[in-house]
Length: 437
Ligand code: LMR
Image (tube, rainbow, N blue to C red; front, side):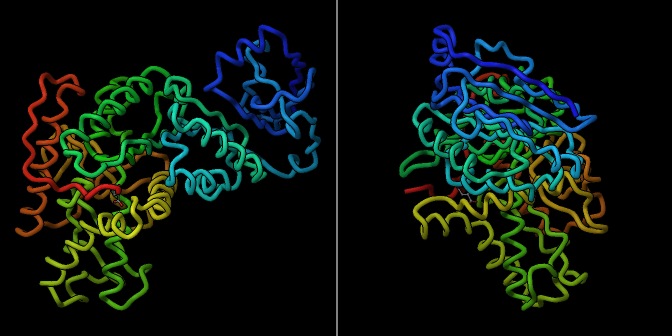
């Protein structure tokens, strides 16, 4: 067992640096060590860190200048002896997960799932790096405190900041949830510009400081074009590592098909969402299966499939906004978990999942250089391949062409953010969901 020890003594310099990092407060829990900077309760803290043999993780505390360290708080000032427990566990190397919009509703569900181990597994320690805004920094402290109170054994570090360059440092996963919700009267083109700027900035920050193999899942809407902006601003990260979340749409489609067929939703497979996360998205019932059979053989009401089913899935988010007065949050966080799990576990034989990815090299004839939801499979290594054995008919082709046209138009609206010249915004129709009240 490796052991690192250091003594912290708050000094004037230290306090000044604490002020400097007012928005960069860190809660660290590395096995046997912890720091919490928000409350200075001790004058002289002794902090010990221990890690299991062969762990590559080097506690950040060893490499930082003690003068820039926050001091500890309450239970985190104590030296733990969890030796017996550690000897029975083999922890994997710590991974850094950055989450933007971390004080929001989606994150409030998601962070606790991540910390519990249900996403990356029971032997995978994680560091959560939370990005908020100046407005949300108090709430972000509340989130960190609740994480602290939850005593998650796998949660080794929590840090909060409003600076993406700090938060994305060495991130292996970046879950980009934070975006301005569409308020009443906000034009879609305006939202593309407002949120696009956020994602351009975050793309630059990822490019500068994240792991070169970071996997990025963009949730903030309009997520396909935000993902495109983000990847264009991060040329040193493979474009295929960027995803726009359409897994929620896939889950919604599965639920509707199950309902109509009178089966539980675990019987529904091979559901693709094609295109944009907007009301032009195409839930594909041609390739989907129920109990292994083509959906059209099980649900004979093809008019329902083409009209009611399709529209229900396309507008489900909007209906939820009307009910809640805000966007879906719990089901979105579940679908983020599903999306991550689909990349870190092998896809079941014969099945696939939907995710919005960069279209270059796609086998379906979809325009290149956009982010488009397509069917994918993964070996569980974080990467994916596009599924080749899918069929198309005229209906599916026409619908795909419509959502493709929309994404190409959105791309033109954000040319100023992708480094491709002057934006010309002529959107075919307003297909976004109605927005929060
Ligand atoms: C959803 O599909 O529920 C959300 O993306 C809707 C929204 O616009 O926030």
